[in-house]
Figure 1 (cartoon, rainbow, N blue to C red):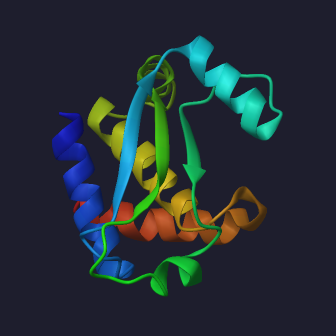
Figure 2 (figure 1 turned 120 degrees about the horizontal axis):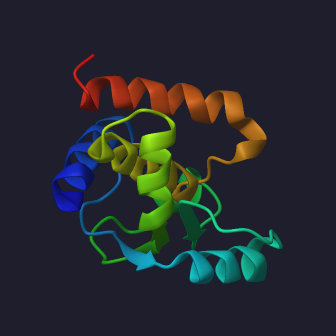
Length: 135
């Protein structure tokens, strides 16, 4: 399920952001405790979250100047499956939809979108998810 959810989001994401298919990211499944520890260590926030993104580049411009023919690592996504499942119930979504939202959210953080620009982040998420969910 997660692989299919990721692929549908990835395909729509790639239509909006032209990133080489040779570039990779690592997705990790972590416990609530590990999520909390990473969130505190990296972001100084003392609580777990559904997704944590550790990008290696600060924005899309830095990624776009990389050699598209090289294999580059863009960063890591840490998924807290327990919170994803809880959020699906809390927000009355299908589990696959919650995974897609979280994966897209992490991808956008990976290319430099942050909560400091919440309006822009939400707008892009909504645009891409409408396509993924065929709305």
